[in-house]
Length: 264
Length: 304
Image (cartoon, helix red, strand yellow):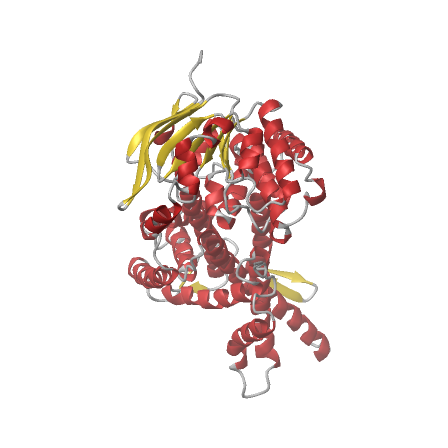
């Protein structure tokens, strides 16, 4: 690598009481890459995401992103350095429309001047127009036209998932954290998701770090994969390398299944 | 007056409606404070009525000749600013340390704060009713026989202006939208870059400002004493009638209660004068039976 990675996690450890959820994990994500975290349930994937979005502070380790010390920031500062995320359980503004949800994504780009906003001066109007334009591009990209003015609370699961992705995109991130983007989606919807991930990477130049169980999707879109189990790194490499790695196969299937299964 | 008795009654009726609307505006503004805080923090501030009372006393303390004797038009913004600071500091200094506690303990805390504020106001200003000295006290306008107090008209006009300003604030400004976002989904708001804790303190500040306006308007049409804050209970009923999550609902609820009181008093049969006092709560019960979410209910059935 000629230049520093966009995101670098070094020796991160996170404990919850006696449980070590993430144990001395290091990883780096290069600019323009799609990087996937895989592993069985409870492996620590979501905890890594929560460390990155400053929901938890690791007991040990460091996280740097694009020259910033992430651990010095609070949750609401994370978007301002160019990190956006989606949630496994979809966190949208339920009593608002799709358009309004996406517009909240523009929050970090809004220049606050309450008086020009209150009196809707030409400057404020102009800014509003720019944000609307940015949001319309996201709507076009994700084919959300039909739902633009629909309330979130009435939308089906698959659409909400796409809206949440759209809201993250509206923040214009450098790094997008996708927490199980394909969970709960139909085969067709998962295919759409795969296309969008590719487009975001290739056309928009967004770096993507995702947690995903669907190995089909992971193999299709990821450049590199890190497999975790019990909070520890098992293997890192291309999807094919990781899938054929003996430690990964053992973690998923168990070498002597009955004994292994009896432990937990 | 030699005019027909019927004509006199009609004029009387207009005055009744205007005065009811003016009262309703005050209830509505207090209810607005309830709803703003409820939406932002899911806590109910039972001291909201006492905030209103305190706002009135701040203004009175600044402007009345017995106290500081400042110009009324200077005293009003000062009282609003002081109540805003008080709201912010209360959230920042007290409630923020209670996050994770049950809503019940927060509710009880606000009830206790109400008692403290009543006592403090009584000690600092007076336990007896005092009138707020306004430039328009006792000034009436005559609309062809219908005599209306300037204070009552002013209450209605100020409430309309404040409502429009709040509507624009919540729908157009960065801060207002951030407040809505934080009230709907805190987690998501954080990751859109909204500093949720600070926003919640600012909601408390805003509801303090609105309470100050309500208090000044209330005191402008009569005397105020430390227990005036108890009309917050009526405003609470107004908020519930409107549907606790709805800002327009809070105002409409306030107007309904404001109108029903004088009308019930006027048309109650002889010997049933108490009807006016019961009417607001009777309406509350009827609304809750037939529309449990309130008139402007925003809650939807959860999908599974």
